[in-house]
Amino acid sequence: MNVIDVHTHVFPRLSRAEGRLLTDAGEPWLREHGDGTGMMMSGDAEYRPVEAGLWDPAARLAAMDTAGVDVQAVSSTPLMFGYEADPGRAGEWCELVNERILDYCAQAPDRLLPLCQVPLQDAATAAAMVTRAASQGHRGVHIGNHVGPRYLDAPEILEFLRHCAEQGMPVLVHPWDLLGSDRMAGRYMLPWLVAMAAETQLTILSLALSGGFDKLPHQLKICFCHGGGSFAYLLGRADNAWHNRDIVRKDSAAPPSAYTGRFHVDSAVFDPAALRLLVHVMGADRVMLGTDYPFPLGEREPGGLIRTCPGLTDAERQLMLGGNAQEFFKTGTS
Image (tube, one colour):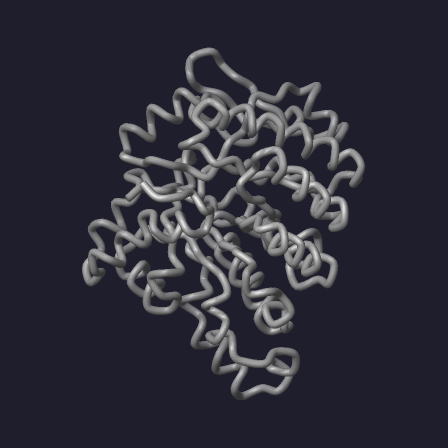
């Protein structure tokens, strides 16, 4: 069985001039240092120090070999989404990014699965781009969990997700533009530690409580990063509210726990007790290996948590290490 990592990022080589295709200020671009290190840039601002695996497929493949990872799903970094830009410019930008991701993954097409990005601020254009990207070889689509105040239960975004289901394009959802970041800025990476988990829980609950999942076809394949955020841990609180407050349950046919069979999550929770809870809530058939490669908050030994977590059966480990992702992305048998 192949070991498949569903949550990895790429920032392909993009110059500052190319970044200005998206926006004239705060444009995303990659600064390479020539020694295997670089910097993700937002205009003049240094956003994050990075290493060569982020833009160099040979470095990535070497790291995968060392870690025993057979296949990665490769998606852009959220800094590149461009949802705040003019939709026309964002569409051109996404086309460029998608082309670069295809080129990157073409270095090992049996091991690197390209995921496209789309201008989700214009759902109709995003849907058309998904169709085009699928015909070009993309294996799924990577989206942020919201566009400004609109979460995935917004009618036009539900229509986009319905289109993804019809096209057979899996969807990977990553938190971004994090709530409360202004209050946590500069404090111990708290936006990453707190707000990312909250954003994902907010997104899943919005789909459940609004009736969004009820409106979407069951063939939609959608996965939420970082173990679904705080959803699993606080699911009892959400169910309790649904049963006891009519304003919570007014738009949904069932409590939030009834919808765990409608989506997947990755395994990036970093603690055996957390993984056991996640498997208990979601089922082993809904959890897929995800490491957040190549960023430092990711799992340093890919699959190590799944392999060593007490209380899991060998069959459950096999599903999470690759079996579920093989079905999710239709990668074939090994």
